[in-house]
Length: 329
Ligand code: TXA
Ligand code: MG
Image (cartoon, rainbow, N blue to C red; front, top):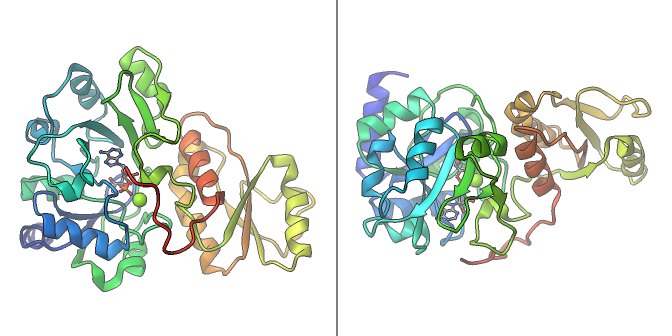
């Protein structure tokens, strides 16, 4: 990545264009968060329904003031401990935040990403960059620049290539606007880490809270159907799918006894951090191999395993008919 490329990307942002950029979690599709028309361009490029709020990315916590209505104490503490990093904080917004960014909500999601290219871009741009994951709406998030190009093609003005993403699943979304902090989406920062930092239990907001696309069942899905079963059920489930004439793959550490060699093995490491890093690559590989179905066992839900299990459940969940509008705010 050269200084010239960063400067070119800054000019694209300043003129209302779209810049895909690497973060430690997944690639983002960025626009000037202060420019309604530019932000509208994000929704068009992704095919994402309007009204879904976007995360505002900042170069540092110092820039928070302009975007939020005050900075409560726990925010300072969390920012100090986890930023730059894979944590998005939902806070009361300042009136200056564009409606297109928040979908008209009184709150705004903010994060400082931990990637040298993202930070160089944000620093050079100076403003906030609104960015969802740089994939088509409803599909698997991109963890390489190549994924972005394949998904979005000409819809994006420039793709900054920062190599494969280190974390591999999206940021944890923590809502600080309610009585108690609540996780809206598990991600790169674990619940254990948040509880330790805050010195209190952190719950998860049940469905029915403010709509977040990451909470909709149809998200994070490859074309292949995803079937999540307990480990002991993998061979039986594979046998059923084969009998139905499907092209079957399994996602796991190794081929379990009883799973025949014609079944593709996509290696998902046992270690939760490695599994998070490789998960979306595996799901994309399933589609590249034109598998009809991928059978995967539930990973252990410790640390990042929580986010991995969450994404697998969502990939396996019911899919919205195309044209369906997900729940509103
Ligand atoms: O790791 C990440 O978070 C990546 C990188 C690019 O930063 N971004 C990302 O953005 O995953 P996106 O748009 O794919 O997911 C952001 C999630 C959505 O589920 C959205 O609804 C939620 O954050 N969100 C944003 N602002 C919100 C708000 N004010 N209230 C509730 N949820 C919000
Ligand atoms: Mg997304």
